[in-house]
Length: 288
Image (tube, rainbow, N blue to C red; front, side):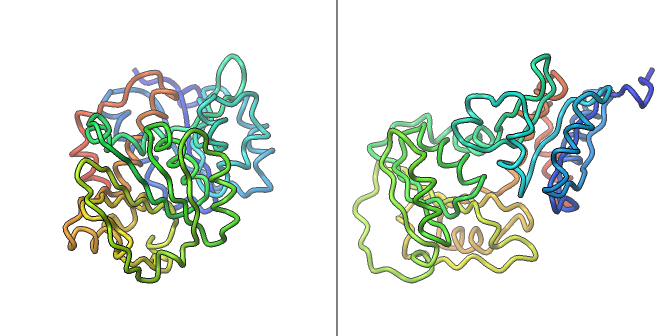
């Protein structure tokens, strides 16, 4: 028998805008596959309303927490009672969970981003380098995640000071900065032998997303054999991924990260692992 609607375990995703979010579809799919009573919704919350939102939700019966998307991943932090060490290191929160300690902020973006790279990271390389396009909340998670696996980082942002600020947060690896414009212009740089190297180009900006201008990027900056990873998932096949694949590069699309980070959040909200054996069916549903 289903629980009364008032006490159903409930989570949601907040942001502004939020209509485009696929998170309710993902979490709803998993709840149904597990036969669990629960709700997952999306709620538009403007920046000036964050305090009132959390004041209302923190003691609401059945509320398990929320995912947080742009532009609130840093703005929510003052309204929480504790920040998980991973989220504190990244400086951004994408998952808020109700606990006996109060509201705890987590970041599942880093784990979700790394998930489709696990097979590569299990291999040994002489050198690893990542070119990260963007310096916002998602870029912070990506940069810290890759730094933890020994990558030298090149961080590019619209304004060089944005890239410098993120680079200053990264400890233990070499970091370099550039502007996005640098990667828009062709280069005649001659790449050396990349055997036993792992090169990744990651777009963490909204450029290339439906309704946004394309990402200006010249593939002369991409080493032979590099992997192209675009965290944008609408459209699934961005211009960056399409050109990369046409040039013979392996591509990773934004659904991999979206599903991976959602699985971490699902476990935190509902206390059970997401049924990942149904990933192929879920991807088909998300791209229908």
